[in-house]
Image (cartoon, rainbow, N blue to C red; front, top):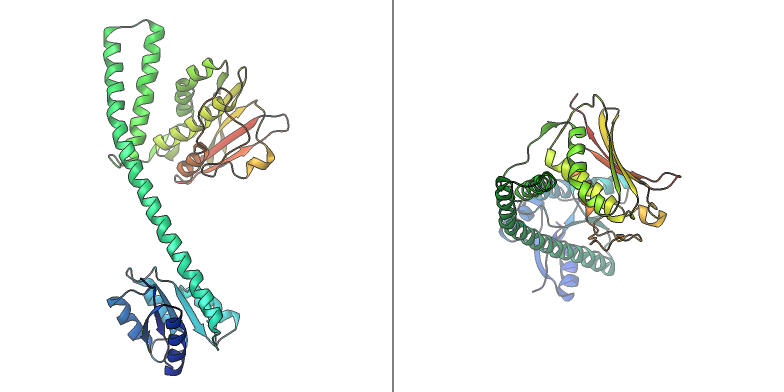
Length: 351
């Protein structure tokens, strides 16, 4: 089915010539001679793109564009201005009103077709991307929903084992399993909106102690030292505790994953102005300069690989960035001259 273009121009001769050009190119056409007629037509039938004259009787092209962009039904339609005005101020005014492009009169048909094709292609790509993202979101919700049942079974099995009694060492691991499973359940519930995440006053030192405790066994299994440097009188931050916990867990698990046996990881907290910074530093080989720019992007594939065959999706650091920035925080990484890596995030204090 051909794309439909609405041409808005108060000069019949311009309409006729442009309509013939676009019709020959295979487009379906709608025409309007002023802004009011264009607004009325778009409420009845939605074109794929609008060619809009600037100088018209009644409401001009700028006001017509603003009204189209203010309407939910027409705000996504790309608008290309047709104008004899060539000064920069008018071009800026056109873009400020919501136009995606402009064509200077007298119109060159080859140029007009090229610009129209470009913006229609961009719209099609955007629609396809939106469909793909919606499909991924649907799949993720299904997957998250189906993960809740086995997690509930893990929690019930752990509770049953604790009730029956166990040696202290095993009892401690059962507590770790229970805590981790509940954190996973909280993350899934938040994703599914079963419970709305709530902003709370959080002591990041206490949170860091919990994360270190939960990852001690994984570090021990690789002969890695996992240490926590305590900070006295650390101010609390206003954040969603689950987000901060998930972000720090990603940092620590990444460090364990990419550090060779015998390495050392230090988790510390410190005050940075009106924020609290959490750092995860290791004494590994660091990150290649060529890889640093893509560290916090999705599916980043770094030169370094996990040292014990662990799986790496390339999503961990991008998740940290999304979680922390959603809480008005910042993320980053440093690479000391002495070697190793230091990944950090900051969250604003409540003061």
